[in-house]
Length: 576
Image 1 (cartoon, rainbow, N blue to C red):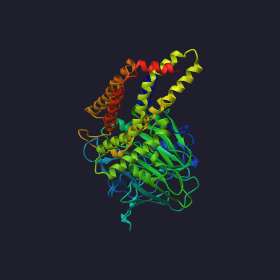
Image 2 (image 1 turned 30 degrees about the vertical axis):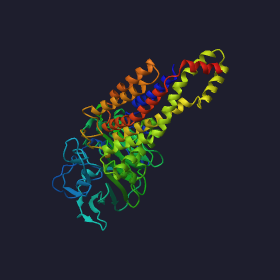
Image 3 (image 1 turned 90 degrees about the vertical axis):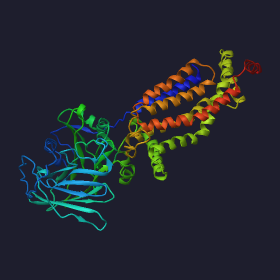
Image 4 (image 1 turned 180 degrees about the horizontal axis):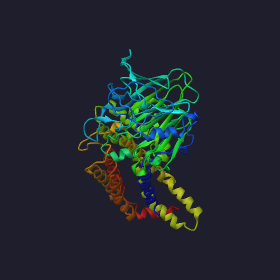
């Protein structure tokens, strides 16, 4: 097979076949064990994780219906109320979020993000909590009893404001004769809420606070199906890398089983495509988590995650509740590997993740320092990258041009010395040396052309998961993170690729196979890119158009040099 065709096919595989394997988001399934719902789930503390906890939390409605306040009363140790009480709703507003709390259970039942628009409706702000499902719910494990706190009525202290401008909200109740207090502190500049809890008269050995994450977040996206596909629980073991378990994988478990993470956890989150609700440990890690399936793989929009927080002897606990967007700068500020909340590239994540981070940071930096919208930032990024690679591409193209001119002489040597491999090798090396080239010249000529490939793959994940591009309009497109509904950009991308091929093939040596691939490959890429984010199509189209002048200049050089004459080829062989 012609070497040029072989190299072309390798490039085609890298640009076409590999993305088809990489682009579908694939989450790593955590290395956890399956247990029956009735067995001990998390250690330590074993007493806090029995089947009664999972059954109690997943079998009942987690959010009470706000009504009139009820008087706080202890729950008997051997009984559980048949139905939730009704209580008041307490609202707390910050510049970033408006929270609604219920006095039954002292839980946040709604969060409205002030800086994000709900794309599903076209107006209004993003609301994360689903109807009837709080953003976090609590159970108290005391001795042999598990007490659902959403059956306990709390009183509320008057809201206070600290000297730093933070607001505080304290809920109080009495359970089994022990006073309980939960205090939330809201910063005006952060989505993370500080939570402080105290159970007076100390806690017994094995007592724990069990916290249930939301069973899924409300979809606020124009493409709700894509948003639901990305629902997942993500956790960071204290001594291991970030692990992710999608709702679809969790739904595939057999009924009555659960996935258990026994290792101490630094944080755990319930996430959608762009938003999350996360519990972040303080003072000491969480003891573990129980993840239970609630639906079939086809309807895997609701799953259960119960987090275990052992109670110390003094009965005081502290953690953070993050309710907000997956903004890159905020994930960096949270630390603890929150930047790995989304895994880019599946099994190729170790290779693609660094490229994705670099590309994301460059685009964010350009947007912050240039007076342009993200659409124009993508255009400038594409043109700038092509100009930056111009010298390398120029060298590569000229090397390819020299190889094309050398190819007839190489083929003649191979034919002349086909029965003498050693002599053939010797003469071919001499020919390379005469033309100041080496056998590696074809490979070195292709390497600069491979540099844009990982950047293209990284950009796919940037447009797919970066909230900065969510809902960003550009020209006729309402959202560059979604596909172009008019398909103008994919067609423009394919047309620009076709023009590049036509310019290159017009003065290239005639080769039927190369010509067929040069005209057929743009068609394949156009079809492949039809449903990919418009921003990715914009970048690729700009890259192709920015490369047209360089392709035209090289074609002129090739035409000016002309094909090697038979006379020159014969003279070269005669010298040997």
